[in-house]
Amino acid sequence: LHPGQDRKAGFRMAGVAAAVKTMVIDRKPISPDQASEAMKDLLSGASAGAQTAAFLAALQARELDPSIVAACADSMRSFAAPCVVPNPEGVMDIVGTGGDGLDTFNVSTAAALVMAAAGIQTAKHGNRSASGNVGSADFLEALGCSVQLDGPAVAKCVEQTGFGFLFAQMFHPAMKNVAAARKEMGVPTIFNVLGPLTNPVNPGLQVIGVGKKSLGQTYADMFQAKGVKRAMIVHSQEGLDEISPSGPTHVWLLQDGKVTESSLSPSDFGVEAHALALCQGGSVGERASLLREIFAGGKKRKGETAAHAAVKDYIIINAAAAIFLARKADSYKAAADIARSVIEDGRALALLDAYAALSSSLGAALGDAPRVGGEKKAPVPPRFSTEGGIAVVRVEKQVDGGAAIEKLVDALDEHKGLLMMSTFEYPGRYTRWKVGFVDPPVQVVSRDLSAIITALNDRGVVLVAALAAWLGKSAAVNVSGD
Picture 1 (tube, rainbow, N blue to C red):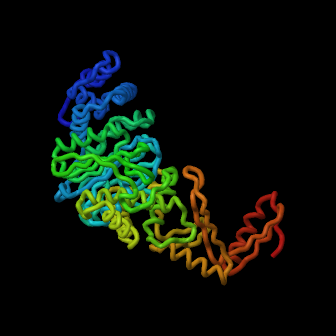
Picture 2 (cartoon, one colour):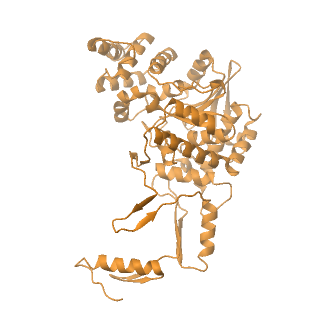
């Protein structure tokens, strides 16, 4: 139930039912009061799944009314958990409404890390995927961060690292009552619009991407009426809810109480235009791997692809918009130079690692466990034994990926081993990968249905004996030799 209310089930149902009747049967617009009551029904769990979907679909089919959005946002905030940070007027959020259907790289999350590394306190509001493929929460978890943090924990992250992530499911627990309907619908709803308006930190600086151009002025008007310090709303020519790496982006800029409109292109940031397809597709793991590769530095490495350069510039221009809005630079090009230097001198990677370590520690204290494939997994202990009784000690250390590959290549000049690198990428299907090792324990030479396995060192002697014993258990395999 909505906190402080004790309404009977029949009356609660009337709110959303009446709103659906007005929009679908009477074909009339609903009032802000009707929208507020319907939203409370949805968030309290009083609305059935079919009614929830009907309300969201009917609302989506109509032209968005700022007063309706404001009423829904007020209702949603009344259900939210708080997050208090010092000086929220100087804190920034960068987020897209989602729903553009273009499945691009998680640039707002990556840009948020860059702008935090540039000295802008950032409190990013986000969620798992609802109508897209990879949500910001999914992306951060793949990067080794915990998203299961409460208000005090997020505030601590912002204070100590400059970055914090407010996971919508943690701060808007009532959203669980509409999650199933949103997932089944698979299309944008008003909740995509409400996200940027319901950040519990209430940041004074915001960069918002909209999937529909018609939303741009709506957001600008709402932020202006709300008294937001500075805000930027963007919508690209292709329909992106971010600044486009390939072409013009329309901008609504709110500063000093006035809204101005303009257009931005990659050249305004001093970068080349890139085909949008280079920034599309990829699994959550592939995207996380690509971001860490980009954050590893500006050194051009073997195997670097066009996608690497495109995504890097995509991150830079979106981070630059936030840096400009925060008045850390007096032009977009100067802001892009700052974003690039933050990436190439290692500050972005250092911030990501610091945030991952702190959020994981705080998350563990709150009972969060690492996630693999979206499901919680128990952490692997640093010391354990295999079923065969072999003691294993797990050690983790940070390495420079580019330097490690170069060292491996040098070692392969004198040692047996292997380095496989795919430089071919097709978004959504084929993605770059790297596998390498030196001094393997065994050598396998196969022909037709026969194979000769030779031990190359002491580890190989142990492994060959174990393989022979295991293979000998199968009647289909003939094992011979020493």
